Structures are given as structure tokens and as C-alpha cells.
Amino acid sequence: MNSPTTAPPTGGHGAPPPDGSSGVRLLAGWYATGRPATLADHLGRYGPPPVTAAGGPASAGLIEAVEAAGLTGRGGAGFPTARKLRAVADRRRRAVVVVNAVESEPASRKDRFLLAVAPHLVLDGAVLAAGAVGADTVHVCLPRDPSGGYRRLDAALEERRRAGLDRVRLLPHALPHAYVSSESTSLVRWLGGGPARPQGSPPRSHERGVDRRPTLVSNAETLAHLALIARYGPDWFRRSGTREEPGTLLVTVSGAVVSPGVLEAASGTPLTTLLDRAGGPAEPLRAVLLGGFAGTWLPAEHLRTPLARRDLAPLGAAPGAGVVVALPRSACPLTETARMLAYLAAHSARQCGPCRLGLPAVAEDFAALAAGRADPVLWSRLSHRVALLPDRGACRHPDGAARLAASALHAFADDVDRHLTEGPCPAAHEPPRIPVPPATPPEAWR
Amino acid sequence: MNRTRHLRVDRISCTGQGLCAELLPELIDLDEWGYPVLKDRTVPGHLRAHARRAVAACPRLALRTDRDRP
Image (cartoon, rainbow over all chains, first blue to last red; front, side, top):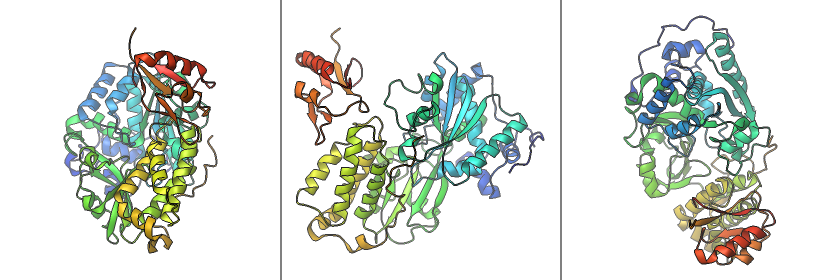
């Protein structure tokens, strides 16, 4: 891992472009070799990043290529990446790029996985984005956890330094591991010396972010796609995925499947195909949770739906950051949801009253419902409280918790009725099926 | 000058004192903890003076009216 790579990149411009249509791009090297790519591996496969002078004419070319490719953010919100780049590039001051690999969503592992197996794709993307928006500094933000990710990132950065590859500064950071600390304004606030808590805008990060400079905060996977668009162009990028949502995305499949893990798939791949690629259901499924703890329950009858915004929107769901959690029929969906809500409540940044007080209240109501301890007015009180969460915080954390709660009440309406009238189901006493971190407040915000 | 105004609450600053709901009950409710619920963000012309008073009365300076987007 630490071996010096002063040797020039092998093969000059790298191998010919990988076949765009196969649906495997970011993980192609991993699938081919089964080991993390060193800088030499990376340059051998892809060639050096086509970097241009910051602010030069070619940087506008990259933004245009990203726009033509139709790349959208892979961190969950799905915002068009070119618009984000342009908003920062249009500001006068020297900009800053922040790579968001904090990935605090407990059911997502894709950014950690990508940085572990193909760190230089992400870093290339960050350096190219820096060139496009006129930045001289890239902050790479990881969660502060014992997985060794920070050490590996540091080693990858050292490889690049020794090779003299980049003209911008690349700085690694390990942020507190709280659910809301991966929100883009939390990163900006933390990098400014504050707590990793969301900041109510304005000013927006692209106007005044890190060091009061225009700041591009981008998800790690998004930047890796950008690195390939810069090399192979928008037409290549569009060879995979759907017309409206081109490209591939990383998906974390967990829960009741035979081989949980991270895989790469073309946008628009049916959910059943994704489950099959994760070894298939380990037992009959009741539903899948899409988008993570702040996501939506989708009953099993909808599993043929393609993983794409356009197809999921009518069902009230979205791909989010590519999270699919399979819930077996043998589990109590209300108990599983109640545990997730308790975790989300504990991870409120406690800055805004409606979230600080509303989330624990909703989580307690849900726990009572799941345990069959409902009082006569629980249903109306819970519905009212859930409805009051969205759009009343400095960030979207309460909105996400409300989405999870509301979708559980909707998707498992029969279970709700039974729990209200007959008490808990037998499965409520079984061990939980979906791993949820302890519902205790984050240890640190700094 | 007659552009529509929209209510906005700085949720981090707001501590739920509740004066806004007293001065502008047509547009603002309180939840069970005393934090404001905006029934409608758009301030109609005939309530503009009331809205201004509510904004001025907030001890946390958490209530504002914006001219542009809701």
C-alpha cells in the first residue's frame, strides 16, 4: 500500500475505455483484480487525469461534458452536477472543493467501499472538479470510524504526492460520525472550525462556504463518475442507464439477502435484479426499504420497479444514495421502523425545536405502537406529529424521519390495525432483523 | 414595491416563545411544544402590517419576511 510509485504511469493513456454498456465502471478494476487499486494500477487502467489549468477554457469544457452526460449527484438528492459546478465556477473568488464521503447513513457503504477499492477515481474527480471551478484546495471528508478508511486515504494521497500528480492541495479529514454530519452544510461548518451540525442557509455554500470562499460540496461517487466523463466523454457515459437518468450507480444491498454488499448497476435496473445480484432473497420478502433510514418502504409487489427516480416517484419512493434493505416476511415491520426512528431521533442535531422534540415523540409513539401498548388516541396523535415534521428544520433530517414513519404507516397499514386492536405480533418479540446503530446521541460534534 | 412577501422562520434561532402566533394567528399556529407552524407562507396584502409587527416582536429575531421565493 505504501510502496512509492515514482515510476511513470504504465501504458501512457491507459487501456481503451471500458465498455460503457455493461453497467460496471467504477468497480471495473475491483471486479478484474479483486484488490484495491494502487496509483500504478489506476494509471495503468485509466491513464492520467486530463487536468487543465484552473479556470482555463478546457474547464468550461468539462462542465459542458458533465451537463451533456446528465450526471446527477449520487449522495441522495440527485441534483444536476453541472449546475452545481457552474454555480461555484461563476463566483469570482478562488473556490474550494469538498469531497463528501462521510456517508453517515447506516445502511449505506458505497462511498467507503469505493474509496477503499478505487480511491484514485474519486481523487481524480475531485482534482478535475477543482480545475473546473477554479479551486486550489480539496478537502476529503471521511467518517471518524475504526474501519481504517482514513489511513488508506492518507496512503493514497501520499502516493499521489510522490508521483507529483496534482497541482491542488488535497487534505484528508475525519469527521464525527453522526447521522446529520454528512449534510453538506455540516461539512462546511466543521471545516470552518465549528461543530459538524447542519447550518441553516443562507449563505449557501456555493456563495460562501469554507474559508468564506465559494465551495463545491460533492459526493465521492459523483466525483468518480466525473473522472470517467472527463476521460471518455458524455456519449460514453450515456451508454448505460436510462435516457432521463443516464449512467451507473453504486447500490448497497443489505438485509435478508444471501450476499449483502455494494454493487454497481445501470440506473433503471429492476429491484429484483439487484436483489438477485446480491445472492437473491434469503427468505420470502415483505418489502424493501429504499434510500436508507430517511427513505421509503416499498411493498414486495413493487419489486419489478426499476431503480430510477422516474419509476419510483409515483410510488412515493426514490433511489436516494442507492440503498436497498430487504425486509423478510418473518419480521415485524413496525418494530424495525420503530428502532430506526429511535436512532434518527437520537441523532438529531438538537438545534431546532420541531426536530429536537418532535422526533423523540414520534419515535416513542411508534415504539408503543409496535409493542402493542397503544393508547386510544395514539394513532391520531402520531399521524399529526409525523405530518408536522417536514419543512420545519434547518436541514432535512426531520423530513427524512417523517418520510420513513409515514411510509411505514402506509405500506404496513394492516399491521398497524392489528397492533392497535390485538397488540403486538409474535415477530415483535424476535431479535431485530435490520441492523440499527444504538439509539444514543453522537459522542462528539467536533 | 408591491411584491408578495413570504414568511420564513430561522429554525435554529427560534426557541418557541410564541409571540408570532399571538400577533399573526391567521398565518401562524403553534405545535404542542409552542413552536410555530406556518399555515401559509404567503402574506396577503391586508395582513402585511400584522406580519411586520410579528417580525418585530420576535425576541429571537427568528421570524422574517422574504420578498422572493417562498
